[in-house]
Image 1 (cartoon, rainbow, N blue to C red):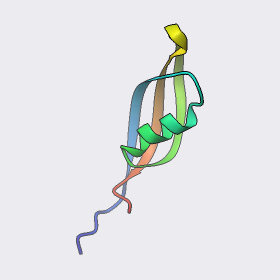
Image 2 (image 1 turned 180 degrees about the vertical axis):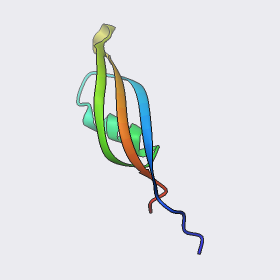
Image 3 (image 1 turned 60 degrees about the vertical axis):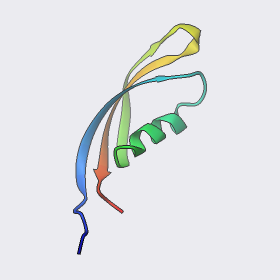
Length: 65
């Protein structure tokens, strides 16, 4: 009754992150798309002022409660 079937979804994200730890901002960004099952940083480029441009590839479980 009203339950959605969870499905796997591939997600590609590009983020610009400030200096500091990466885990928390990456997990927050991925959580907007579902429950992360696995993810990898596929590209990381240093930007001025210590920022980093990061490309992520992930698999998330979408529609799970």
